[in-house]
Amino acid sequence: MVRLPDKNSDDGAARDEAPSLTALSQEVKELVRLISSTDIHELHLESGSIRIVIKRGVHLPVTASTPVYTPPATLPAPAATSPVNLIGHSPAHGEEIALLENEEIIVAPMVGTFYAAPAPNEDPFVSEGDVVEPGQVVGIIEAMKMMNEIESELAGRISRILVQNAQAVEYGQPLMVVEVDT
Image (cartoon, rainbow, N blue to C red; front, side):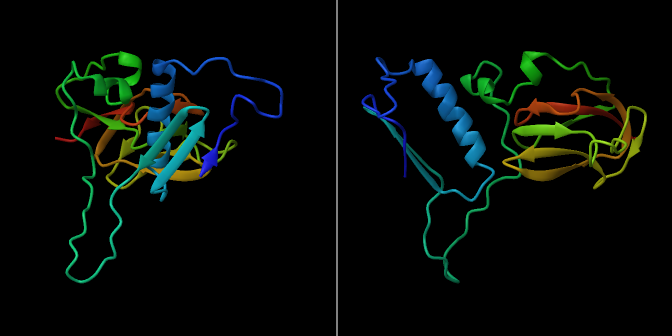
């Protein structure tokens, strides 16, 4: 359990009021996003009168007869008017990405920092105009000090790169547009 400083903490900086519900909900959303890519199953946070518990999944002993839940590879997109769109399912910063008939988007599979190259002084994995194949690495997303290779699931030509090197990205944020082979 992580215990945050109370109002009467030793550092002398007393907090007079609880955070607003909006600020608190944004921080909880960010915590949920961060722990979703880890093996953390339960997180307890307390600060003064505020107590937050985040639990993930049910943990039963696995036996040969115990069914095992496998989460879907991708989450279904919520309705455009759904409040869930504020959590990262919408395109980058609410901008609509105009696509041609034969174009598809490579999206960020997690929250983190996008890197276009394997190291600062190396060439990028792909550039606009490059041809990609399924399984080819097109970038890296650093999340919690772990480097996660982002592979293309598409075959085609990179027509647009929508993010900058070392840019923070959200789950589901468009990274690149690929003109797919037909």
